[in-house]
Length: 285
Image (cartoon, rainbow, N blue to C red; front, side):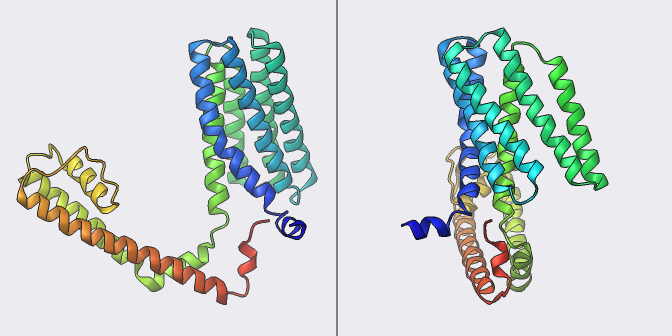
């Protein structure tokens, strides 16, 4: 057990960062709902505490995940983590009021600002500098002009959005793009998927013309998407025989194509990872 833990210590910061980034979504939106309804009651204080502690844990795992990049990166994220956790815990004790809310608001923007400045210091690329400079100006504008009832709603929304981007970056950063390009080239995935899209569009035009159940081309296209992905929302259904026949054809074709593409990509990706001498470069740090 100890050996298994030691062999996976490098993955713990990554998995922790992913976990708490995902948890930010429901906590942030629940907190915003409570804040809009009643900013300073006990339930809002509890969700505020959970929200800030979660942000702190996100930064804590991010600090240890990025500790190999540079010491300033590690320190900045560690300090932000401590500030979030401490203020979230303190809010549970003293409760929320206009003064503590402004302080929490400023702590969040100070941490966000410090991370953008750090990004500029680390990367002197002109594109990165301009991007982070725009973000810094936006942070200063929001921090200066949003001291009102909905200031924490802005914080919650931006935190949830940034967590979404974080999760996407964490996921796609461990995908070997060179291998995916080779898979697409050798399996003709683009041609197969393009054929499926063309069939969806063609069937949508036909369904819109011949079937009264569809009021527009977009309704028909939405229905075809549900058929191909086997989601089956059930909000739209064909009303005559021709529409049902087309649905069967599209459904069978979609199932075959999706299953075929999925199996080819998974198997081909696995084989290329086995034969690639540099495959360990894509493992989690």
